[in-house]
Length: 351
Image: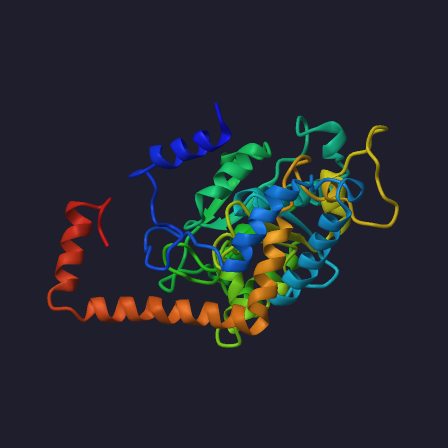
């Protein structure tokens, strides 16, 4: 078929099947749109069609990704020395970070998981609050850790993990390789775990601390809300989405790991047909995927357009909108009664 005809028919055929998720007045789910520079950069990404695998296969794309890594760590308040990777979303960021954690925790028990696999390895335990996101469950399944090794700890009335509960969880079966999962902005409540209090306890017991910061980690870029993340920089790894609060097109997420050696060991590979660079950064050494598009281009464009101040204003503005929605809806006559009835009678459609 003629290419123009294909596109014209495609546009016609999707009529009525597209949602307005990219618009500013779409209030369903936790999805974002795209800032203009990121959208245009996404068109260029497809036009240039550079494989973001090796420096040799796309030098400009590799350098853009390095710049993005440094900018993101600065915006999120993370150590400049942390390694990073650009992945499809927060789910794959969890996989990347916890693969590094698996490597490091088992290495402490003299087990080379990349060479020996998990058969016969000391079982890894993950401690998490019981409100954890479902992406964690899928991650532990993919990594072979298993859901039975995830210990769900209760949250308190404020919705976050208490130090006493974490301490008891760490003390039980002490000596096992342990990963502690903490939450930066729960998807249902927006709650942040008290990192300054919890991370030192986990560290004292030799645990790896991973932060699920799908959207909440962006609060670090806001002078008004960055206090919610006090102490988060002491963690070992962090996962966050780009296609949420930074408003770049799907699909884009970021993984950061403090122990770059564990990150590299869990991902890297060498083969005679690959042209590795001795000085520049090769993306495939840090990312689960080999063949993937240069998603750093949209991240670069979004940050250039917004700048530090623009990112902060975006976060604070959307928080103001959310607060206004909650307070003004709750002030409507009978709103509380109707919401309660909706939850009891139609839980899937309740506000």
